[in-house]
Length: 177
Image (cartoon, rainbow, N blue to C red; front, top):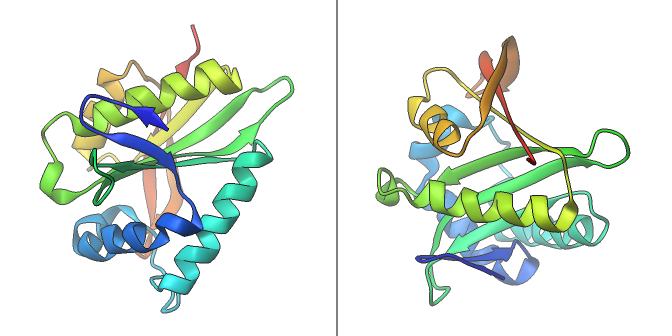
């Protein structure tokens, strides 16, 4: 568990799958412009339990770190941050993905969550680089990354299929200085 002043970050597991599912259900409209279109079986408790089990396995294998940011009494998910595609060897890097509950936007909470998650990744996994990419229209996401010290490295046209269409992305990274 990683504690911040307002949150407790814990690994996404089968045990907390129900609360994580509720987070995505409550924020379905809010997150839709920034997420891939999911099939009908995605947003089910069974699927989230399976994903939680896989998250645990991937954590143990140093493949991914999927963190859930809870309120202090761990009854509500405030946001998530995922460090995926972890590559060791000469690259020592991963990708960062994240989202915040609509009710907590603009309060500096995502920055607080990511700052703690990034510190954990750099200190414990000893990675050299964390890469994060965002759709140019998502100015809030760009602002969070800039606050955290990410630097722009490029621009990728039609990088990911998000909300049903190929979207350009700004490519950012943060180095473990």
